[in-house]
Length: 413
Image (cartoon, rainbow, N blue to C red; front, side, top):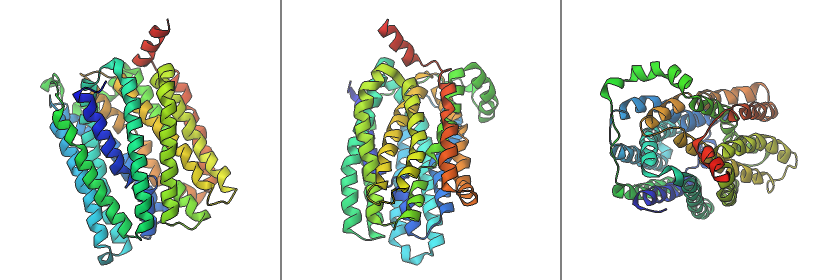
């Protein structure tokens, strides 16, 4: 299983997980914005930057990278830009006293925009390199091992982060966290230097940004699995984009402090790890299509659970919500990433990734709208209506045909 290529991806996944824990977009980053004096609207803007921007920019990068037979060096460039973004936030926190709260939040937004855009650039290359490096029959096992490795890395860094947040006061704890994140992500690039990448055949006559944009309707018409996966991802996206708002909701219920934020992250990680142990065995039976169903169910349960737990008015019990959040994140990463690899091949994987990302409109628009919807109506309305809409994804899941599922049926027969 762990040949040189596989090991490189596992190596990167481990160090990336360590880095991203210190800057978790569902707990740590919203906490930084709120502690700096930010508002619910700022959380929506941050969520749009972290989730929506990288997806929508993928179509631009896809048109550029489709022309490149080798993608590894572009993957490394993207990762190094992400390292720069982490260290940039750390440097900005160092000079925090020189900024007004509004200016500091704007600077964090700019660094996170660089982080997100460079992540989209790296992500296109990553998917292409992964698809060429890991054989189809090994992918289910690979994605589970990768997610399990990620969870172990996150658990290690969660303990470190908890000590960091308790041992140092704001803003020093965040400064050290982002500095560590940059260093750890840089270490994660080392494995890729040992990857032996094979060339992708490129047809220069068929590639341009305008042609790709014009080809989207025909690509969706000809590839129903891509079309359904885009729809499903948008429906799940409604409840995914709510996730950072659980921090804002908690601020209405309790006093928001470093310990509470670290507890949210700690329970999220525990949920990821223990669910991964279950996914390891379950995916052999239900494959990626089944994992998408589980992802939809979990993300639909979480908002309603937030309302139920809030009624107990307990600062010890409410963080347990993030056990479910962690399980949902874990299932969705395995499901969507695996399905996108499975429904594509070497000739169209970059194109599919770009189209898939650019059509995740919900992840771009709704984070900006949720704060206004909450202000106009209530958290209760959002936490009830959005999960009901997400559940409609089951209709489109039934219409998908995933190659990994076909292999599973052949094995059973």
